[in-house]
Structures are given as structure tokens and as C-alpha cells.
Image 1 (cartoon, rainbow, N blue to C red):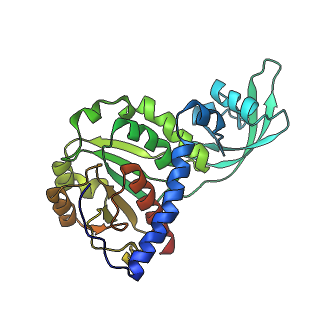
Image 2: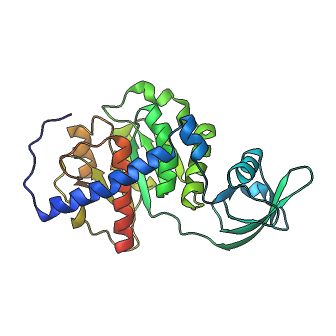
Length: 288
């Protein structure tokens, strides 16, 4: 925690307080939703069943996996002839009719109606603690992020990058879980860059070209309601580690077009900051 005098009340501060209230409740909901304790685990229910492309047959039907079958029968309690919401990973979504065979294998016959627009928001995230990263994967997919770039920072512990939660076989099911909760089908692209300075100086413009860039910083001077992104331009949100970006990192990001914004004088945890700033970023993209 850093000591910082409380600012005087202003219209911008009131707006920030309102946003903090909004996003605090949303954060609590999402964290509870993806809490891995047994009690919360049995209460979770998907809002759209996500199918992998390889599950689809030529006639548009699909055979459910054991996990999907257990959810349809035990949680949703559907029977033959019932319908459920489905979507194809990175593809269309629609309705499907359930057909439970004599061998208790479930097949669904779907009508795909529309393909959701891909998210216009990307995330540059300093690696948080592994247990926080595990919790964040479904939340980020649920919020809607196109590209998640995990990077290093001065206040990131080196051993954080050794966690299994940076391996695709572990984080992809978590991302799909978030898509099923939100009803989206677009799986975020994930990449990892351990060398922060070379990435910002040499590769940022290639990986994230033509983007409006914002930097989450409790000492930022910009108020959230002053940002006016260019039309049809993607947004890149940079969120630091629990200890925050150091001065060198903040200056380097500022030199490469990041506008420093804050959510008021409170110091937020990484997961809370992700929910708050990504929610605002989506609001900005819709308001253009």
C-alpha cells in the first residue's frame, strides 16, 4: 500500500466512485461465480454450451462430451426434445434440440443463427500470483477480451511464470468456461512475453497496431470519463502487478502512447482492476 492524500470531491471523482461501486458488485459476482470451492462448484451453470468444431458432424448435429452430458442431465435436467443454447467455438451460436439415446449418449441437433462480434478490447497484463491467474481466466473470457498478453514487470516474482496456469491445456478449459457463462463464442488469443522492455520497444506496435492504449495506474491523472477513443479502433488496457508498475515502466508505457487513467485514490487488486478497466473499456468502445 502506498500513502496518498485523498483528492477533493469533483464531478470526475463522483463518476469514478460510481464506477467503483458498479464494478465492485460485478467483481464480487464474477469471483463468486468462478470460486473453486465445492459449494460454488456445484452451483455453477453455463448459459450457452460451447461445442468444439471437431464435435460437429456434416448434418449439423453433435455428440456431447461426458462433461457436457453431465451438465445437461444433472444440472439443466433436460430431456429428449428439450432445447438449449449452443455455440461453436470461434463461430456461430443458436438453439439445439436434445436427443438422448438408449446408450445415454446425448446428441444435439442445432440451428446456428448468428455469429457474435469479436471483442474490440485487448489486455496487457503483468503476471499476477498463480492462484489469481487461475481465477482470472474465466473472468477475462466472460468480460470479452480479444488478445491477452501476459508480461513480466519489476514487481512480478520470477517463479510466477512456472505455474501450470500458463499452459494451454490448463487455461483453455477455464476460458471456455467463461465463454459458456457469458454466451460468447470468441476464444481469447493468449501469448506470454517475459521480457517487458524489449516487447514494448520492439514488438508492441506489431502485436497491437493502431490501438487506443490506456494504463491502469492509481497515480494516473486522467479521469475515466475524459477518454475519447477513435472510431473503429481497438483498445489495449495495461494492468500492472499487485505492487503496481514502477516509474520506469510507467514512463516507458507513456512514451509508447498509453494514457494513464485511474479509478480513484483506492489501490485495487489485479483481478478487481481487470474487471473495472475492461468494463470501462467496453463502455468506451460502445459509446463511439
